[in-house]
Image 1 (cartoon, one colour):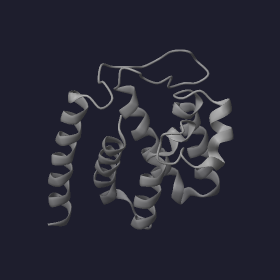
Image 2 (cartoon, one colour):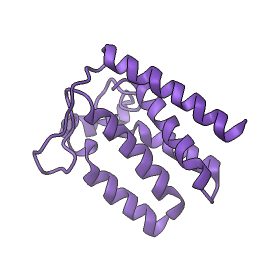
Image 3 (cartoon, rainbow, N blue to C red):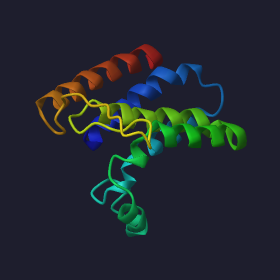
Image 4 (spheres, one colour):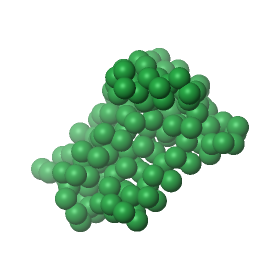
Amino acid sequence: MMFRTHLTIAVFLILLFLPVVIFNKWIFVFVLLFCTFLPDIDISQSYFGKYKILRPIQWFVKHRGFFHSFTLALIVALLFAFYIPILALPFFLGYSGHLIGDALTSEGIRPFWPSKHEIKWKIKTGGKTEKIVFYVLWLVNVLLFIRLFV
C-alpha cells in the first residue's frame, strides 16, 4: 500500500479507538501515526527507510519479512505493556494497521515470521482498487470525525 493509504488506515484506527482511550489522547495519536510507518524501515524508498542510519537494517533484512510480521508487533507491544504501558495499544494498532493494509496487496506479508506462510490478496499497490479503498476510507474517516467531534 502507498503512504497515503497507510495514513488513512491509521486515521481510521485513531477515530475508531479514540473514544475509549483514557490516558493522554495526544500520545495515543502520535504513537499510532508514527508506528504506522515503522514496518517499512526495511526499504530505502519508504518514509523512514530513506534515512541512512537505517541502511544497515536494510542490508540484513528482506522487505516484507521480519518487520512485516505480527511476531514483531506482538513482542514489542508486550514489552511496552510491561515497561511503558501507555505505548502498547497505539504501537500495536499502528503497526498492525500497516500489516493488515499490506496483507491486502498482491505482494502480501508473512504474518507469523519465521513461518513461510503468506497472506495476500489482490490489490495492486498504487492501482485502481487501492485508490478506491483510499477514497472510501477517507469518506468513512470524515463521517467518524463528524460523529465524534461535531
